[in-house]
Length: 563
Image (cartoon, rainbow, N blue to C red; front, side, top):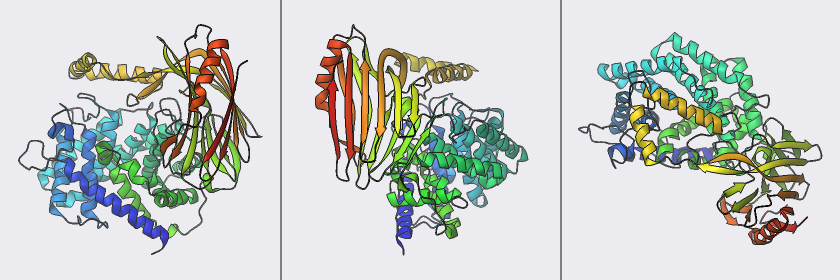
């Protein structure tokens, strides 16, 4: 067994074992009214008064390990695994609203994501298990899936564009499973709507901005649409998306949680496995992901992600096997493994630099945030900028998403950013707000009022409610940053200006070194006191940093001056 085959074996063994563990999340009592429910807070702890329908996607994962002989588990043909998959699917159908939709985040949501994702998974589940269902079970699921498909045909979600791509994949699957031509036609319409919004650089706007993790998710479901349509235009769009995203696959096989609008760090090995059929870059992505061995971190972070994502991990292996003959063909290395280069993407405001010593990414819309990965080793360096704290005014940070930041680039490898310090808001609904939401969303037509309000807020704030921190308004406090990427090191030249009344201001220097993805050092935190003092005295300060990456450490020197 060669190295890559051993890595694939290790991958699928871990994935199958974790998938088998889903049975512990489910109500396994056939006499229980919640038999087959995978939402633990509802059936077990009773801490929730509604069911997140997306957790029933676990039924698809169980159907896969029942129908396939994966290493590491003895589930193929196991009767209880099949019965629990069927029970999960039937419980999903019982959660459906009369209009065909489902809930994810609150009761009465009628959510697009809940309906699209779960319909895709349960359509595939029915396709796998149809021959082993009773006529009654088959009728219940067929009726529920048809109603969900009709709802998806009538609704679009073009703000969260990944949802629209999932809706398209769901309709393709439903069309095939149920033999409904209309569903396939509407899937084609949704794919067209998604592709119309693809930027020139290749990514898909999420709430109006860039999120590489969600673009990977969009790529994942569009690649599954391609399996149905085999459309050359869609194939070209997939190639363009992966070409852009590949620059933001870091050497540790993560992507930009820190600089993404929604903080999504997902990298899709499933897209790599499907696109490996025709894309040398995709073959490199899949192989690198398997070698890194961190897929489980992305797919099984918690109970929700296990229910939501494990089947994608299994499918990645299945498509690897289907495309088995291509993995020894030509590959196009991911940029972090390529020859040195400099690249700037003006639409997204992102710069990427590869030298013989390091790989670096800088995000202009996040105040010139810089990530540096030394060649070799398990280290990374990150300079997010600064946070200013003023009593009675809260905190303002330079790295919060700023759509109006100005960003420029020179071919010599110099990036200039002008960014305002911004506050942030943290979305934790008051108990009274939760009560009002619960009451209104359960009134006839009330969910439409709630949905319009939520859509208005997320469009205005360019943020998803799942985020902990949401970028606030620009302030008069400014950061001017120049980043100079040299062969051996990175130089950062900063100028901070604050308001005259900031006499009690305290500054924080947001610089950190990570080892294996966890913060191991704050190398310049001791300089924060001097920076605070200068800003209080003169309102302006200059900071110069030199970052020298080495395989076993990152050396950082800092100089701070008044004006």
